[in-house]
Length: 325
Length: 307
Ligand SMILES: Nc1ncnc2c1ncn2[C@@H]1O[C@H](COP(=O)(O)OP(=O)(O)OP(=O)(O)O)[C@@H](O)[C@H]1O
Ligand code: SF4
Ligand SMILES: [Mg+2]
Image (tube, rainbow over all chains, first blue to last red; front, top):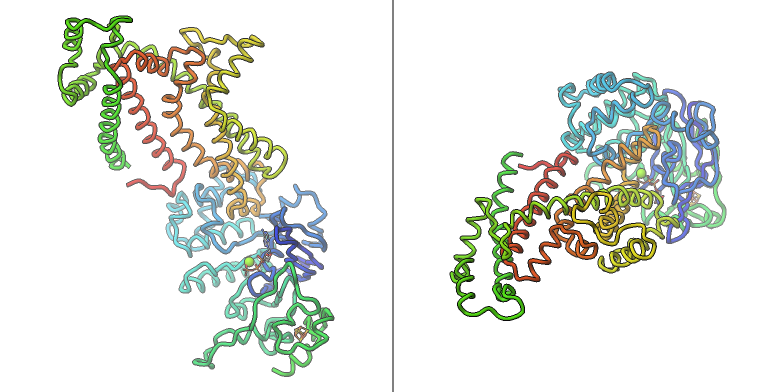
């Protein structure tokens, strides 16, 4: 297994109290596999990814439990220097907003080349040549000239290609893409997503794709993990989920995507708001918003039931949910 | 860029005229420039008339200003009443003040930036809180108090330094006065650097730099500092003009014969030509320093383009 996250807990100490952002998340990614992580804003998708990368803001963040195994090595127990060498070379991250994630005062060539200078000990000149190659690779026109340009001189789509190039520079085994197309124009979203999928196949990387966009998930992901209030509520192969969700929250998410065959019909929206992470409801944390909730849901925390082959659902009534569909 | 510089230089003209005219008027309403010349007693009418004619003081004010400005552009800043050329005074005074300013700026850079970086990286920790408190004290205590206190302690009490700087004002003698001159700005530089570092530390691009697996020192120097110091450098650049003009208090305390000293003497003796001349040059220094800072800004931050 390439990456195994086991029972991860992360909390943030803030003025308003302790925010329990991640509460026992477990997921795994195999080499060459794509895991899509879904969930509303604030469900802990990014925090989990940051914990894996080792770029959590500490303080206020704190990992209070769990293990992160990367190629069999527990990242939470190794020395920081070893961890640093893995970052960028073994695993890399693509951020949502390339404009703020790239350094505004360094040329893109410097920022790309830096990967080779630091991790591979290359000379600046060789690194610059590799930067041009990378820019070519992500199909940036006139790469040789543009390598000296600064991030603000590129369009949003081109900037995100540079982010992708930077993440793939050292051909890491795992890439985490945190909403890589959300900040882009709709017209270029598909192009960037296609490029990412193509390169992932070519380099045979494992990919964690964090997204709100259920549309792309069906095309690129092997598995889906759905998060709610810092927990995985359903985890399954992508086709199983689309066929029939085993958790009411997943069903709510699926019902809220616009579909061609239901044009004109009002879109479904999950009622209510995500919970306050300093006061997560007892029992099933989804119960205040769940259309299927019963008394037991208010008191008993549902474990991740085995709901089929390689499939888990954290709902007491996953069977009903599955068959109702 | 070239067009921008030309435009800025043209904009300087009205500012320059306005500032000099203002100081010219102020110095002239300040009192009778002749009064101080005949010792304790008032001058007799004949001498007054003669002196007024000699200095062109019988002409209307606007004419005096025009004549004066015309002369300035040919490099003639007039004569002080003691007969010395004002340019001569400048030639001795400005090098001293420039040296003093350099010492002050070095203090701002070395101490101010270092403290700012240290506190910005450790916000909320004891170092941060104590340095912050210290800067608050420095900012709120007037410079002449800090200056006199240091002079008294280091110069008179402990005799580490000479309480009064010799006329040639060597660099070594200017260390303590330079520190006094820098003190308030130094406190501001510390605070500005601290805020800037703390803000940028949490920025996305610093997080990216960490995610790239760069060693910590590289993240800090190449990514964090590069960005955080842009506003600090701008502040220090702009401060150079202010320091030179503001040296008047420090120079009085340590008896340094620089620009501030000459200005003080000029004002005390109603010496119009000296005061206006020195202020004119200071205004020019200020304007040019500001232009250079703006140009430097474009070099440091590629997002800024002047057209
Ligand atoms: N730096 C931080 N300081 C304090 N709290 C934080 C911080 N980062 C995250 N959190 C807390 O963790 C929660 C989960 O955040 P996270 O960024 O993982 O959500 P997300 O699922 O990625 O949502 P989105 O879709 O909006 O990106 C936030 O709601 C917030 O309460
Ligand atoms: S456990 Fe109960 S509240 Fe939670 S999702 Fe299932 S039915 Fe809804
Ligand atoms: Mg997020």
